Amino acid sequence: MTKFQFLNQLNSSLKGLSSEEREDILQDFEEHFANGSVEGKSEEQIADSLGSPNQIAKELLATYHLEKVETTATTGNIIRAVWAVIGLGFFNLIIVLGPFIGLAAVVFAGWASGIAFIVSPLLLLIDIVIYPGGFEWFELFFSMALCGAGIFITVGMYYGTKVLMAQFLRYLKYNVSLVKGGLKNDE
Image 1 (cartoon, rainbow, N blue to C red):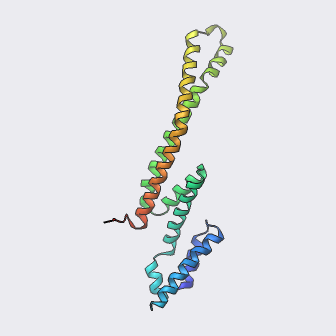
Image 2: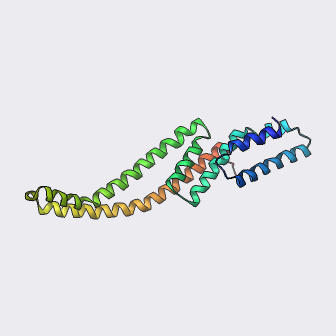
Image 3: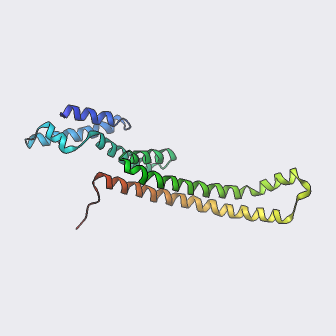
């Protein structure tokens, strides 16, 4: 593969990045080709030593999306980061998607139960309007207790969601580092 073919393929694989970021990356790889030619290597040898442009683009996109999640942790950014990491390899489909679905289910269930507990007094009021003769004081106090528990659950879920997102982001970064070449031993 020639330098032109390599850079073209890399550029087309980096569609998700802005033109400035793509130009910076392409310039870095042009420098690799320039340094390799100074050492007497052919363009094909340099391209072979760099690896597949598609795989390089997948790794760069995964890193980009992970950095974007760190700066702006929105649901869309998290999902894009998860898909970018999954795109690094088939093995990541199981290693990343499984924990992501499990974590999302736990977070959703926590928020749903907290909110349901908070609105329990409203549901009691609706029940009283529909069946006025069925009112019992125990139900009122129990729904108020559930509302208080719901407030504690939602406050806990607020902080728990932040911690779980940060830990999952660390997990994604760890996974990307493994795919990029494994962990380096500092001995």
